[in-house]
Image 1 (cartoon, rainbow, N blue to C red):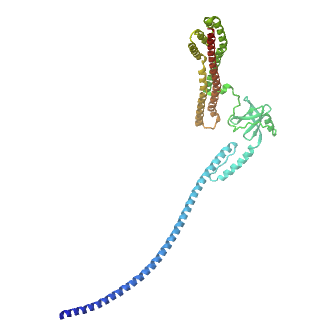
Image 2 (cartoon, rainbow, N blue to C red):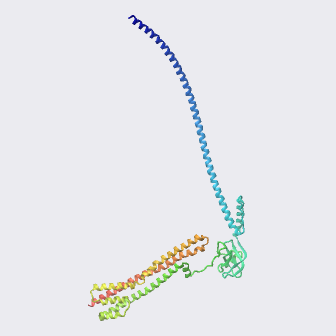
Image 3 (cartoon, rainbow, N blue to C red):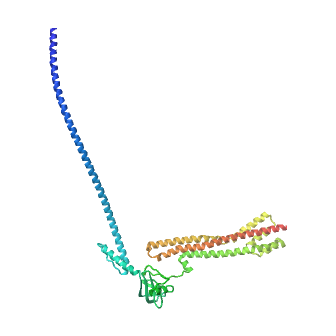
Length: 436
């Protein structure tokens, strides 16, 4: 028991000594940890301050860099705009140079026929332009005045006449001489000929005497190198010839249609004039001597009306219905004679404008072929195709309109003759029926 107590006492003393040691160790360790904590807190605050300063410096650097980027972008845009304007200016400079060269070429070409040669230096266009303006001003002054010079021109018969040539710039000229005076027109190779010696004589003499005539009889021309033909009055044959082969075909068809219309008119006139007289005479013979006497009378008669009346008289003893059918059949049989040439006339009236359209298409094709080969510089080359295009249309309408009207009138006339024959036949039937 004592041992146990002693052991417990020893253990208690030992434990007491250990707790004190542990407390000291814990206190020491706590002091160390507290010092470490304070040190870490201090370092954390220092790191926090350093980080804040670094972040502020970084923000300042970023803002500075953003400003630099914006400035670089603005400079880039400005340089791009400058480059674009420089390209535009270069293009405009090239266009202006081409325009100046074109003007110089046209000016030198225009002034050369007047003996004004312009020297063009590609390194100094201004000098050439100044020369052009000087020459042009001089030429305008020269061409805007009326000048009288001694020269030669040709009469309409081709004889050469010496006299005075009155020039109004380069657009008109007059020839004055004791033999002949009048307006001049180009005869080719810069030669002039009298165009109108009668009407322009007074104007030519007045201008030669430095006077201003009340009426200026003038002929304007473009240049003196191309000959101007004398004005000629076109005949009907000339107009048809200008339409080519198609024009003559249309005219021939028109003549044929007109002849057929005249022939049909004679047929219808003969039929219409004999209807009333023949019907009256036939009725008298029928009432006087009967059917045989009437048939004997009609035997010597010719024409559509006589044939219809013969068929009617020959069948007067039949039923009325049957007689009317026979009359209708006889008139229908005569229709082919009364309508003779009618369809041909209407066909000609319908075909003529189509031929005119064909001529128009042919003429335009010929014109475009000439334009393709020679261009549009010389209007005379185009006149042939244009004449075919216009004249054939005109001829087609001239033929079609009257023939169409005549054909319709003749058709109406033929229907009227048929109605008259039917009326005459029915009149015979009715009068004969009254006598029964």
